[in-house]
Length: 90
Image: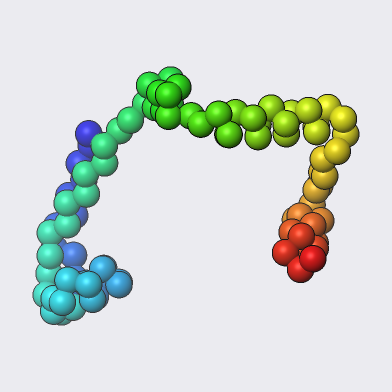
């Protein structure tokens, strides 16, 4: 875990955070930020028994549809937006 300390930060420089604390924006504060460092690994994956058969079946069917060429490839943000607008409006 790494920790960073900011000393004598004026409340109004903390933006919306100070409002949530109901503190005087004209006072000075010491701010401590701790960041927990985690390494992504296979241990971050859920255990197999938590993966439903329904999800497995859906992923396998998606793979079959892809192999049959039944997918939609959106190459730009505009194509992506148009595609989802069509789906949601149909």
